[in-house]
Image (cartoon, rainbow over all chains, first blue to last red; front, side):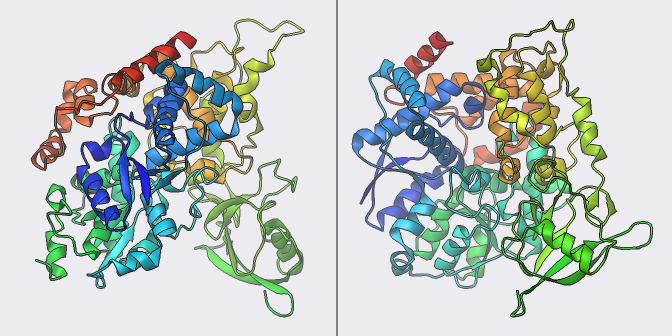
Length: 292
Length: 306
């Protein structure tokens, strides 16, 4: 099985571990990833708000690169998933949009015909690899681990565009945690916002939102948090101390990318999981599990 | 629903003039096919308690009066299908007047502060020519029924964030700011807090009964207006971000923040920066991306089109 791979900006800088471990994990299922070298940023919340033509064209260019290879795309970031899926849908459903974007793409001799599907790694694992095959690769079930899932807004909403999960009562991450052998802790805040997209312009607001979930996960005695989005990861791991400070609390709850959680269950080592890059060290957790 | 065709409904009850605390009452009512939540409440009032208070009027998603929570989800009672063992509660974050009726004054105040009417220099002359194309961006916004479901799920309003207008108010603001007949500099005269603090979570879009894409049809065009004049901190971040993608294809957050943050803001973030640096998470180096010229050509092509 072969797929085009679009990691996006964050896994190429602050969360390089998400890129590295996702590749390692997926190879174990016989999937060959072809990275879309030269693909640009998906536009995040910035370009999509203020430069709609650039937003559509950059994402269409990424899709065109995959189409040229004849491959569907795998993403590992919720916001990249949303933006690519949105442009893809518009181009497929509206000939005028397609003509307009392709006219811009013609400046760099590219064309996108709408022949590509975009899927987040979590959905790909559950849908196309399937629970049975995942379980067959698990050598170290995370049986005593209580994991709090955090979906990330752009994995769930708007449902008309994404549509993998029920945005009010999603189950995909819970299923994924259980496949890894761990217990999913059902926090009400799992579908809420981490505030990442405002962390540059208003870090207090972002930390307050992050802190709310950290508070809930801690109160529910979760051992760790898992998220399919590297941006949410950055908030929970990188801004955990700031969030605690703001709420007058001290949090210490390790956070994992989905590939890292699966990698742990597959028996990957601390080094292979690149856990030394985490601000909140999961060392105590490894000790609890008897892995150190 | 039981074998006798009856369903159970648990309803939030509270009369601040009599009750010390809110409580829940469970009622059994006959179930009818395609019954809506509002039908169930009417049935409870007719069969069990004529004092049960809730607002409603049109029964067809037009008046926006019957917003409430059903099993924790913000819905219009006239539209939502009823089901057995549902829990019906008032919209959250607002004072309860009685039972399912809430006081929406604080939301109305937020809308009024944004002057939800067209401002012109002089009275219009008849007949006024309005080009249909000019009104396209407003078409969906004009369908807002002010039910406030969006306000009830907004995480920024939930925090009580100072100054933030909230989704419903921003829909009303965008209706005027995007209207070519309006002469106010609406986005320029507001602060970043008023609308830029929207966290782009789509919670409001998820509950809107008339399918307004609050983020894409209201908040993002408002942000774009503000960015054009580079007013406020967010606009500066945005400009640097757009330039970085043009020059490097991918955004290196370290470079972004160094270029966009003012010295005091950089200083405030110094501890986060040091932590990230020690873990090898930040670097001034950006990887060279192949075919970067393509991106520059795209930028150029969109400029020409504008």
